[in-house]
Image 1 (cartoon, one colour):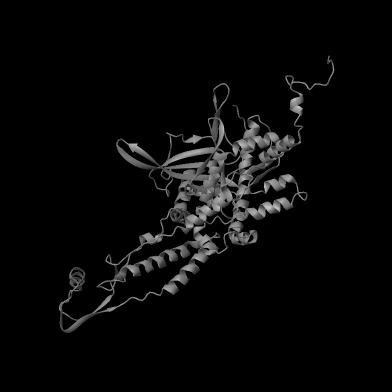
Image 2 (image 1 turned 90 degrees about the horizontal axis):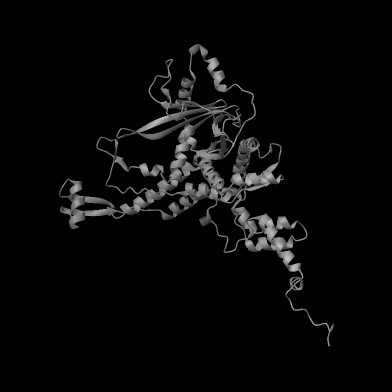
Length: 504
């Protein structure tokens, strides 16, 4: 396949402007890249990305907790004798999976008026792409942004998901809608002899191609490479992609745009965890403390009277081993029981859980009492917050898919399939909405003659593919209206009925 991209106008990069402005200090491109990386590693944005992924995987802050007491010097010290239960509640994971499953679990519907274009898009947006979108959606919710890279794999247009914490975007505009360049920082494992070594690699992508580096050592304040060494092994300078033409020659090309597409969770690019972390932490803490109190309850506070020794550790040991304590005179042992206010604890946890699902915009299936067959109105009310969040995600993803369509249109045009840049196409996210099937089927029946059959079929709960179902219905109607004797009359071997002609 031979691909020749149209000639483009070369645009100045913002980073070039920065270079021009900093010409007095003679900063190199590598030094600017290194400064961006250093700033990124210290940013709150990256910290929240890491936190969002940790909480999705169940690595909550409660797991780092230590039980502290006042020591002999008045300072807090860890007491390992106290119960230290660490209860993790994976509500964040449930909320993320709920949003992804609700919006991105069903195949995306592609509707284009041009049949050739429609067929080509269906071949690209296949089941593999659906899985890719699901994972990118998970990245966007956990980390605020998800990233998709456009590339060629053996002359075939392909897409790849990149971890958001590896991508540093350089935007053209304040609204973050157009990319000027991106810096990708990632680690790979290599071996030097028999020793495993972690190597940090850096890629700088702009409209002119890609530059690759290996992070070494260097001083970014000096006029040096700032510790970025050319990655000769992978190719220090390259184009966006290369293809092999019919003559077997490899040709290199660049897109007019940076071949990366950003998928945002919201316009502010903030992850879900930022809105509910404090609530989830308190939920983990309160339940863990309650569990600790229950564990420590048998070990009540002891009041000793005329104890025969001053060593309290020995007292606890004798009490555990022998169930006896030596006292003198009129001494004895009394206990102070720990009072646990279970009602206050229950109310606090219920409010916490309600707040987590409210501000996390999800559905708490345990907190509802809708009966065995809830009505459509009740279900809409239950799913109101989740549906609102899905609307925001869908708006952002629709804009991102429009950017992706630009690359697809260029590919189809340069592959000789056709120029569809001016064709209208509608991409619909089919949500996995919980419905009352009886109500939906009844409404479908009542809509016959009022709206089109295709719309009725599309909204029927048992239909997964509207076009296929319409074809089956048409075939069924043709079979029902056909003359049952028509096939018999056309059979040449059928014995003809006696009509009396030629009888003797």
